[in-house]
Image 1 (spheres, protein in one colour):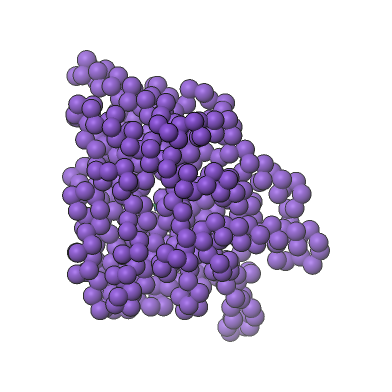
Image 2: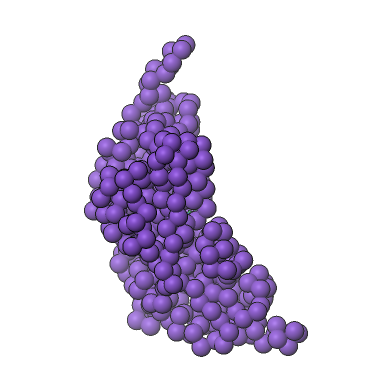
Length: 410
Ligand code: PMP
């Protein structure tokens, strides 16, 4: 493994991992561990700059305001968006998609229109669109996948008809690891004048995003999956789309003037950020993106692809193991999702935990996908910057042991 040396000492940067040498953390698709730099940035913010931003005329409030918007600029730059004021902070991807489905959807989607999603969507990028369709009387259509777990682009071309207003799709599937062809999906949506909204919860942590070049109209992300704190994330929205969106929540900060009978709105991003913002989260996420930038996103991708390829090779020789998703490591992010013979995924996960191996078992918030795969659950191991080939070896050894133990008792 060529990247093993470069990334092998990162564990020391992560206090939780450093304090638990035996822990094999393979659940970064659920949430990532946090480097000391992020924890320090949050502490430093509270020790040196804490005040409610925007509201005070005093200097400290200005310091907090600068910290908040400085973080916005850094995160926007990391994601390749030149216009930082089009990055709206939210609690994460879930709130970002709800913001789009409400703020954009209620303004643009009407009875008889069509909304298209894909079969691999996380519930966060499925249910808000399904419910919008139900509320306004629009059609909700699901593009199926190929056998290899890729979006069936021919079917997508057929589904995206003249009445389609939005195509909502994930950059990377959390359940299969599939990396979608964003440019092609955007081209299909734009071909008939629909917008293309991308759930980047599993994209932003692992791939160079380049928002301004990607063509998507909106890109949502979660800070906690990319080394940042929980409770912060956001969505970047193209300026011309943003200008047509209604506010999502009402309250302080998002207003211009409030009269007895009506209210006018502040400019973006404020218009979409009602109430006291999560400044510590934004500051922590900015520290996380600095950490990722120092590693280099191309190196992060190369490291994860090498680990994934190695994991796929090693898992392939375990008898009875069935791997879901793309056949090549190039077509997937650092996710391997599988079943192990007739052992229930929850039992696999519990047995692995005995060896300190943390994997996820379940439907991965993708019940429509699981139903199509005829599975109630899979086991998912997911990799990030601090994982090494040793972690893959530990996973494989523990799986082999679990199989032997299960069959000894069966
Ligand atoms: N989309 C995808 C693809 C995800 O993996 C997740 C998190 N599992 C989400 C959306 C939701 O993200 P959050 O819970 O951070 O809002």
